[in-house]
Amino acid sequence: MAIEVGQEAPDFTLVDENNEKVTLSELRGTPVVLVFFPFAFSGICTAEMCGIRDDYSSWMAKGAKVYGISRDSRFVQAVFKEREGLTHSLLADLKGDAAKKYGVWNEAVGAAERATFVIDREGKVAYAIHNEIPNARDHSEVEKHIA
Image 1: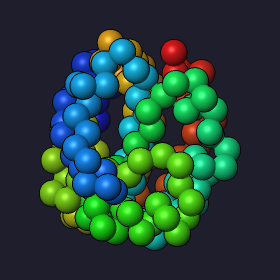
Image 2: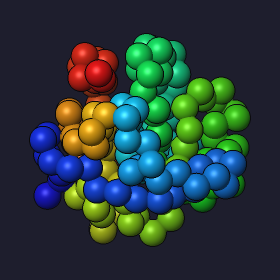
Image 3: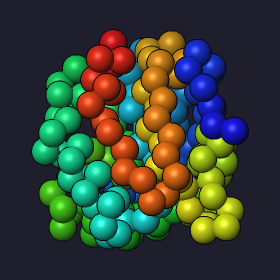
Image 4: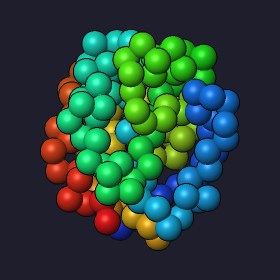
């Protein structure tokens, strides 16, 4: 079961596309948007990540740290970010550890389902979207939950 609004956001440490460690609990005091996606370079995933770049830069303008998270390696994430001109960081969740903590790991596919979590400054989940892999998300409600 996915983590729900009001719950403490599970902590994790992953590396980004530059091999820098990112630990969620170290971001307390800053709103965070976690965007789990199955695979870099796949059609819907690319559209969603580019949509954040093109349509939702206001998330970062409101002070949020935005992280796309998939099971791809940091090397794949780096190429994906560069080729698509993404402005947010991408985290490598190779074994799905973070996705499992958030209840969005799909064991049959070996990838995260599509899920977005807004984490408030105190480390609690303020908003959540969870879709199965074939179904793109509507991110239009995310911004109003970033505070």
